[in-house]
Amino acid sequence: MKVILRSDIDGLGKRGDIVDVADGYGRNYLLPRGLAFTATAGAVDQAARMRRARDLRHAKDREAAQTVATTLVPKVITISAKAGREGRLFGSITLNDVVDAVREQTGVELERRQLDADPIKSLGQHVITAKLHSDVAFPITVDVVAV
Image (tube, rainbow, N blue to C red; front, side):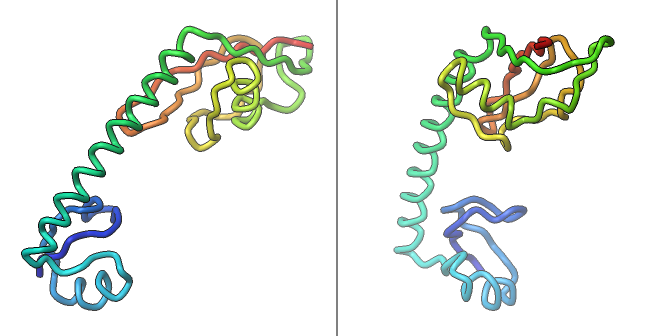
């Protein structure tokens, strides 16, 4: 059975894709939940428009992510925290703390889920990977200093 996807489905395809699925999967799961509709001649044209809109949105999002990356890569984000004599922090610097510091120091709005790192537990410079788009990942340098 050929169907056109109305939304992104992991392992199957993205919105607007025409995919061939088992009859039961399409009839009992995809169609009743509104995740897809049958691929008729008129619907194929609609799917092409959906794909074009998706591609334009994807390109615009990638361009915005590249702009944020060029802003943040050369900057060093400084966070101050209480620390012991050996450089270990009392507590840790979480991703929420990093997001707040980036917003205060650069004005760039990030979300915690866009960052990939463990909590920071020591003084010094640390590198956190930010992934704003599927094609755009870049490092953010965080310098943790003692209060």
